[in-house]
Image 1 (spheres, helix red, strand yellow):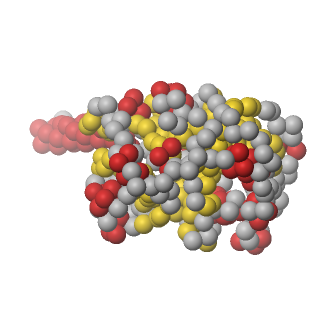
Image 2 (image 1 turned 180 degrees about the vertical axis):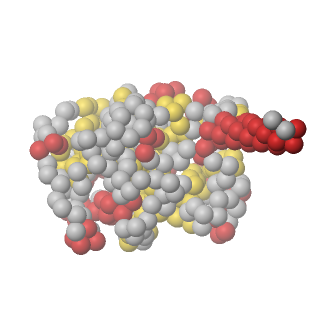
Length: 365
């Protein structure tokens, strides 16, 4: 081989190796390498609750949570308590209805109409004490199993978040169930997986951990008084949000429902996501009345939901505000000491178990 050609060949080979090494490093740094920025990141800025009156849940409130989650949204407001004891209780029952017996209606122009969360398969379980009341039910909509936790609280301070391993940082991960158990969670879902991204406000339990904005993502703010608000990052920085009383802030999205109206179209989708997926969402129905929602998908038995279908479902539950959290293989709901959905962390078509994620949203003390 002539000297000139040999030099060109060697240069091309070295260049290719350098590019490959750099690409591998970037991939490892982005998705694999763990970097703890703050150890023992478990602080709670509970001072923001000092001037907020806390009223303990009544027996009627606890019963209403159970009643509301088993009826159509337009009927829920008429439900009243039956005088059940407010003593702390936790119970689990198996659904007597087989979700596989449901048939999926053909998608057509009717998809643009609001669905009704009426395909109730049964109650998974319930919990109540003087501050927290939860009823978890299973639905079947759009050829997909959906778990809905109807939540009533005496104060938003019981709507908490936790970091994997108790540390804040990049790619610091654990399964939702492990993090939930470490924090004695009554109910938990996966969060926004902040550790897989470089940008996006991270406010957890009243403490701002990341102030770098993601201009492409809407932010869900949960205030100390319990109300939800979906904003754009140019409206305020992270420190200003904390000063305004933001207890939790998530950057993933998009927002699904705002002021009672669906805010996504049928063509909207999270970047690089498939049209139908397992999903995780959180919504507000009324003062200190919320729903945590996890849908299945990516299996032969569950098609998964589009963002628009998820938004329709959240609105049908009565949400005035609803927001999309990290989904896909991350989607997990933990209740009463176990994972109740079928996570697909192993990828499409595989019940691969739980994916390790950066954070959870949970109910607890």
